[in-house]
Length: 392
Image 1 (cartoon, rainbow, N blue to C red):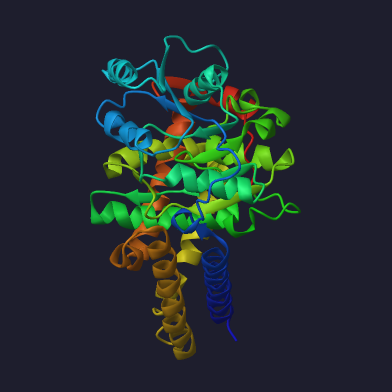
Image 2 (tube, rainbow, N blue to C red; image 1 turned 30 degrees about the horizontal axis):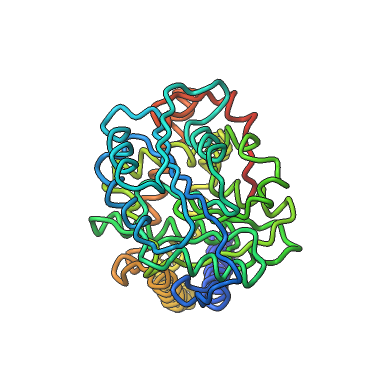
């Protein structure tokens, strides 16, 4: 057997292992991770006070409508700390207007970012210091919830003695191409964070959600705190990992039908957002890591289609057809599980190629600039390396 044939067989076998692993992950997630909408909202002996901490920077287009969905949540003891993080638009004024109409809203305006802090984490810390709740909900300014969501989340957490409940939101977008890219991105993240294993205290898997992470304050007090995460660009994942490592009882849930967010309005916006995590959290600040990762990941993702090209090796073409069926079933099952569409899921090769391009772009820009821009501030690589906390 020639070396070329041996390499071709080895490649297809590697692709088969990859896609069987993906299928296993999806089946585990669908079996073990519950939906918030299915939680029992039976009242505990006393509803604990909950503090919503909502950092916002230049969110004038959507913050009012999103916050109003939180205020209509019908939770009996709630406060909302809205932190204007150095906005240059009318976000601060909108926050003040919301506070004037609802006594549960506390407006906070951050005008200066202290050294060695990322803007979002600093805004979260400022909001935490102003909060009074027994539970804290960290949530982004553009997230929408349906009435009763918080009651279900608290009732479930109290009944199951949880310290952390992270909710993956239903992700909305405006274009088919963006849907395909997001579907691919979500599957990659689900695999990386081992979401089905989050509740297992014997594992290191951990997860957080920028859209909805509910934390018992005593668990946060036992951890190193937000200051430990002050330079971590993957703040949501790092928060979940930190809390679990500190002994918190954690759980992951799906928000389809209860929690949703417009993930990115355009592909350009997603590309800009990828600059930070692509170069830092995932890319390890190094093109020497990013390029092989893109090649390996892309090769495995596209293996069913490449196998079909081995026309002189019919057995590999047959394997390619089987792999293609497994890959399509896997993508459809996961994407529809979190609320995405079937057609974007079936466009998996397009999503894989586009995510590779975004990752490469992030690496090149991060290397060329010597750091990343986020929320209007430039952070050099040397500073971000010191604050890296996420581990996969």
